[in-house]
Image (cartoon, rainbow over all chains, first blue to last red; front, side):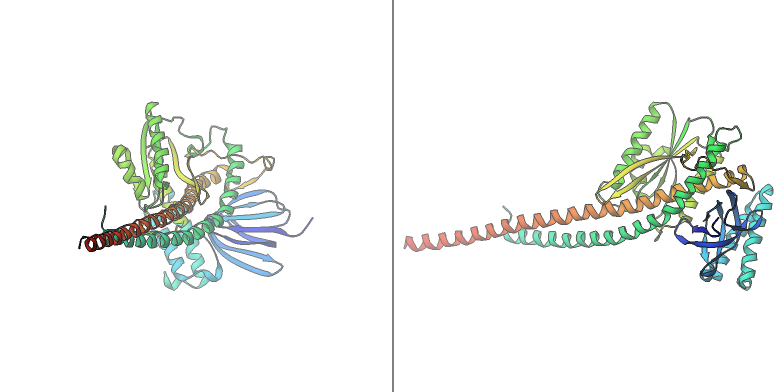
Length: 136
Length: 290
């Protein structure tokens, strides 16, 4: 079996990446996972986090904020709500996302608190990781 | 018979109109290219999305536990028509043909005894519908301040509509927009978004997926997104159609202005010649009388 997969990352507004990859680290809603060739066909939803693609040309990293991924033995397609190459993420974009999530969290019903809290925490985690937390 | 001065003014005015329509046509052509690129860029997402939802809904759709967004409320008494038009006119029959389709649907549904509610996106459609169905309008989204359509715009509209669905304000939602075929042809289209009708593609019908977290959780997560995705696709199609329609309308207008200028110039030259001939006759007959 081939040890590479066709990897596609698309957002509603544009196609961000389409390449041959050896492994892809995906921030799944229930935890991160690394997908490689020959993966069991799976559909999983994403949480905000870093998506790392390793291919022949090296490693590329993207920031995604939810959406879902479709894995199969020879293709990995990630359909993200908002996806940006790591270099394009600015403190302003993140601050925007965090404030929207904060508002959603404050407005949420009690039974949805857990989810909005998690979303917010994930976004803050991204900001901390990129060293943008001072801007929040 | 208009005098020479009037004709001259008229020609000057039509000439400046032609300049404006020509400029509008070129602007529309540039915008059309951008709109087409945007529609092109969103296509991979929409296609994948629909394929996944198709596979998912095929496996869950039949069961009793299927979410309401997929299975519907079990009724079709209250119909919501989401009419998406442009914010600006001067684009041929673009707005009217969408509104016309929506009006026909309203008449059909009302004849069948259903309750109809109308939600408008875009000022032009609202103005036209307000005259006849002012009391059916329940909401409006204004996109006139939006420079570049983004997914966020579609999400806002979807959120509004989904909120109304959750509040049980309607049973079935249909969006009306114009499908872009080419510059001279845009087809007004009605598409039912709630309950969603996704078609499973035949080739991956056999693929069995694992779901994480669970099939139900993913479906509950994806269906609202599906509404936003379909609205986004419709908005982009609409934007391309609008510019296409404007381009061909302005092309026609420019050509008509050219024809009109030709006709007026001939008329102007003839009347000038008539004036000259007249003067000559007067001089000659004056000289003969001496």
